[in-house]
Amino acid sequence: MSAPLASALPPLERSVSLSRLVPLLAIAAACLVALPLVLPGYQVSIATQILIFSVLAMAIDILAGFAGRTPLGHGAIFGISTYVVIYWTANLGGPLWAGVLLGLAAATFLAAVFALLAIRTSGVYFLLLTLALGMIVWGVCLRWTSVTGGENGLRGIGRPAIFADHVSFYYVVLAVVGVATIALWRFVHSPFGLTLRGIRDSESRMRSLGYNVPLHLFIAFVVSGFFAGIAGALYALFNDFVSPSTVQLSQSVAGLLMAITGGVGTLLGSFVGATAIILLENVVSIFTSRWQTVLGLTFIVIMIFAPEGIVGRARILLARRRRSTNP
Image 1 (cartoon, rainbow, N blue to C red):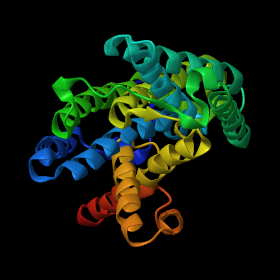
Image 2 (tube, rainbow, N blue to C red):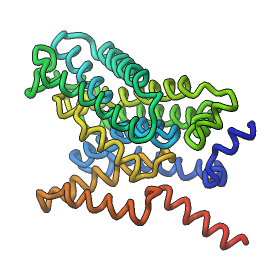
Image 3 (cartoon, rainbow, N blue to C red):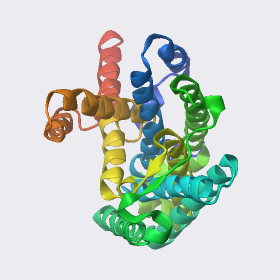
């Protein structure tokens, strides 16, 4: 590894031993496999939702955590995939596998369009531009009633009988999410991923070293959009309904909050963030209709006491403990 790329790795991530990480991941995978065996159907459905939105959060984390670009348009990319899958299967009567492929293609194409318009901006300008692009998609979905159904949305035809029940569908989602997680992990730890970290830390330095920064950001955005499309296609099968609320700003904000809560730049923190936010939403809403206030206050507390996110804070505490035990 070259010196510039090596320096792009945060010290905490360099200190993480793969031999320690693999057993933890194996335990987590075993728990996820056993989950439907101990939970009732409704809770299995919530676990499925968590897995789906974890992929969306990881897709956002590619840009926010590894490329230093915080997007607010991924809800639109996510929702377009959902729209295409449901429209193809319910309105056109096409096969599900083709609808999923078309949904992924639509999400990837939309991400490429967003990227071409946004990659030469950074900071708040990148955030606001992706927000505006997402709002355009929301407006189209709201007004193009002949295709999208407008405010009434589109109803799907249901899942195939082979995985119609909650448990079977959970395992399908778990398998897809597992493959997506491995692919994203390899992507961000590849030389290309290390280059993205270098761009995040010092874009001018990477330019001076001869890296094509816009091209790297474009590819990262497109890859991010592809995985957001995977989440959207899974959500189409999970929810069996899509409306303009699926592509609106709140969807992008929710995915970004999940990535931040778990810890941007950690990737696997997306699972922690998605679990925390979706569980909090479902549990608190039982007791009060003002669950969004509680969620907002919780997020404020996390930002004050753990701005690195839950996983990021845990890494810092573990690193301090190692230093104290091995001076």
